[in-house]
Amino acid sequence: MSSSSKRIKNVSISVPVLYGNHAVKLAPEKRTERTPVDHTHEWTVFFKPVIAGFDLTPLLKKVTFKLHETYDTPVRSVERPPYQVTETGWGEFEVIIKLHFHAGSELSINEKNFQIFHGLKLHPFNPQSPTRPNGEVHSVLYDELVFSEPTEKVFEILTSAPSNLLPYKLSDPSKRDQEFLRTDELDELARLDVYIEQIKGEIEKQRDDYKDLEQEKLALLQ
Ligand code: SLL
Image (cartoon, rainbow, N blue to C red; front, side, top):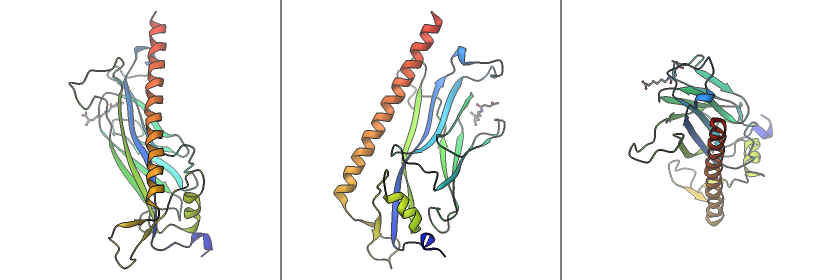
């Protein structure tokens, strides 16, 4: 076994990620002759690290998105970022987002791939809430991928720039189910603040993008 594939005992590292979907009502000008008449929405389902510029390709071989079987080739495979699929449709369903890691980069020794279940949202959570002009809906969730006992190679990738993640150490290795000890809690809190700001920025950006699209649509209609 080479030194870079040696696993570091009693250590774990969490990678903050975002996944979910955006949806808008399908604008008439976006229809083509191939768009089925019953398709009412355009949506994008995605998976990405919160940290801007953090390249997961050294760890991730590909991300597959399993759509409802009403879609042609329901399993869509994406090998590089952005890890996302854009489609049109009429109904909500559960998307299975599967992360396929390179050998030695799995989340843990027993875990080959990792699955996330995302309920695709086309309609607002609260039907009473005022609808946005183009019916835009965002359903985005925060989660953390926990790499336990990472190899030295994975440890190096995760703890160096641009992610600079902090490893967690088990305080008592004989108790596997105890809480992790934070090496530096203040540092971790500061990092969370940065993630929150990045998520806020992301929401703003999406809002602006949709506003621009809405302007374009109005201009086209004039
Ligand atoms: C429902 N259980 O009944 C869900 C299924 C399926 C959504 C939703 C497109 C299909 C196509 C599509 O929107 N499928 O392209 O033919 O609500």
